[in-house]
Length: 138
Image 1 (cartoon, one colour):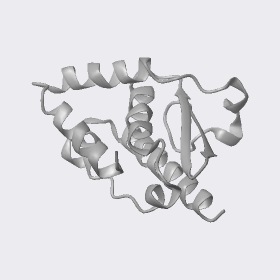
Image 2 (cartoon, helix red, strand yellow; image 1 turned 45 degrees about the vertical axis):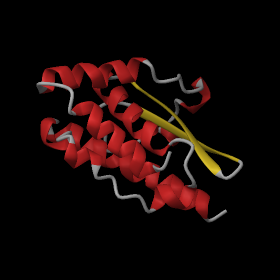
Image 3 (tube, helix red, strand yellow; image 1 turned 30 degrees about the horizontal axis):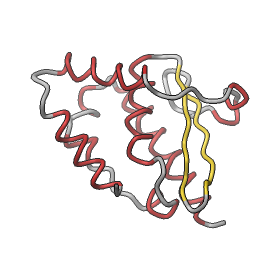
Image 4 (cartoon, one colour; image 1 turned 90 degrees about the vertical axis):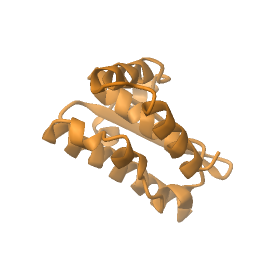
């Protein structure tokens, strides 16, 4: 699936929920199902700066695709990074670097986060796009 197809799928899924409590529950569940990052990447080098919680992100190339793993010490944040990984994982690096992440506004995520969590979301997106840019230059 393309980045936009995955975003459209997420928008559709979030449309099934009546209110934001249900959406938060779904985001938390996504975080619970996030594959664990290897412990060696839970260091300062892989920590995303600008997040209220601790978030670690690792990216590797497998053939011509970027594979992400991540973790966080906060359940909502872990769910948010799980959503982002769902969109970006197993995509081409250049596609990640140049992606328009419209699903965040369409599902109302940013407006339902505290200002510090919203800044953290932007930091996570920025770091993932940076990995895409750096890996596309290889």
